[in-house]
Amino acid sequence: MKKPFLLTLIMLIGSLLTQAARPVYIGRRGSMYAVENTPRAFNRGADKGYDMLEAHVRLSADSVFVVSHDGKTNRLGGNLKVDKATLEQLQSEVYTQQREDSVTYTGDRLCTVADFLDICNTRGVRPLLHLKTIAGIKDGDCSMVPALIDLVEQHGNRGNVLILTSMQGVVDYMQQNYPDVEVWFQADGKWRELFDWIVERGVNVDIQKEALDSTTIARFHDKGLKVMTWTVNSLADLYDLHKQGIDYVITDCLDPVEPRMPLMVGHRGCGFGVENTAEAFIQGAEMGFNYLECDIRVTADGVIVISHDETTNRVGGNLKVADATLEQLKAERYTQTRRDVTYTGSTICTLAEYLDICRQYKVFPVIELKWSTGINNDDFSNIPALVDLIESKGFRNSCIILTSMKKVLDNFRTLYPDMQLQFLTAEYWANHFDWTVEKRLDVDVNHNYVDEGLVNLYHDNNLLVNTWTVNSLERYLELTRMGVDFVTTDVLAPRSLPGR
Image (tube, rainbow, N blue to C red; front, side, top):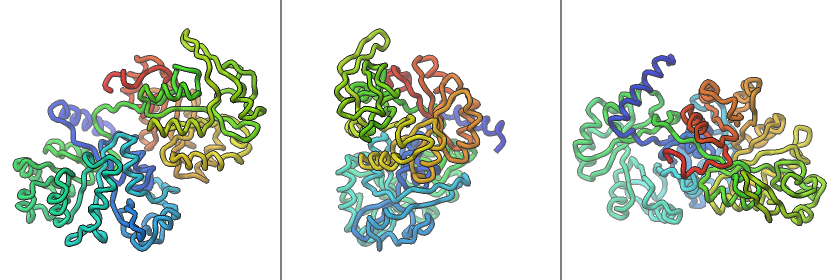
């Protein structure tokens, strides 16, 4: 699509949005930016700003609800039949998939429905559970539906989940037994012959884009019903559907057309408290940040701790982190004056303590790697321990690894291809652009060097843009208008920003 036409479409859709509410955007199988239906795809869908995320429900041999579109894992590089394999067997496979943008993603693993619901909860996105025909969830046998609804309820989603099914018997069962749970019917090309049944049940519908005609949406709206459609991946289609009044759009890649607020990252926790300490992280979480950023180093006794500098001098200590034990570092009491306020009494924070804070406050970690023992361009020996610790705290699929060390990022992309990585850069970002595209690395660029051209260039390659360190409202608003995906700040409290 040529850019002038694309810009015209955006303007047309924007003008429509001033007259009517935009449709609800649903990330199909999470999003296009990872192996489908995996935790990384769901998190990237949340990063894109989707209102809802779609996941396909199947059942493993040991009766665990898992997320998989197909009954077999072959299309994603596996060789198992989902209902004949245990969860342990399924999660031992590593998936690879070339997506519609011709990028091959690898390293992702099967996601459980429980994990999917947790991701939706922590990212503030509504879950859509698309039911496949499986044992106990099919016409004539809904014996496993209560277990699924119990799982949804355990994760606090009973009043929030949307259930989508193409099975009429399942619709009837849900309406009779769970009238408080929203259920939609995937009608596709059958909608005409089933129109009277749909209207009688009063159930909203999902219809494949190719099965719609110019009057379809109006016919259902006349009966007080809503219409969802799939899969909409072009602005031209979106424009036509919006004119017709479409209610919900399932997409792999389209951004919500309305301006989207960037995700907010608390720099070293936040600017209130001694930087990189539990005090700053807790305060940052309470300020409403989506992510908390920290800097890590390794002590003499091999503990990963949070420290920006090689030494503790700037925060009132007198130790070199790499030469001191954790016990020695914990004995120091830090003091730091920030914007004319002096904070004192904090101690060094370990990475484990920081991750526990993130988990307690439901904030995601951004872990900046500083040149440390076993975590540097010449020595990767402590990286496996770092990843094991992140995984043990439940953040393998939802943390961001950030560093300016290119060889370290190469190592991560090779050994941990499922992890979300960002390259830290500044004025020379363009020198590394081709490499970031090749390695599928998002970027974190000093805000002084970020302009609309940079943002568009990375977005055209399906990469995200973070920017640091933004401490003025004026610059935040400029960057928001450019469409940056993350803003890293010391002092801008997310809940007080315009539009939030």
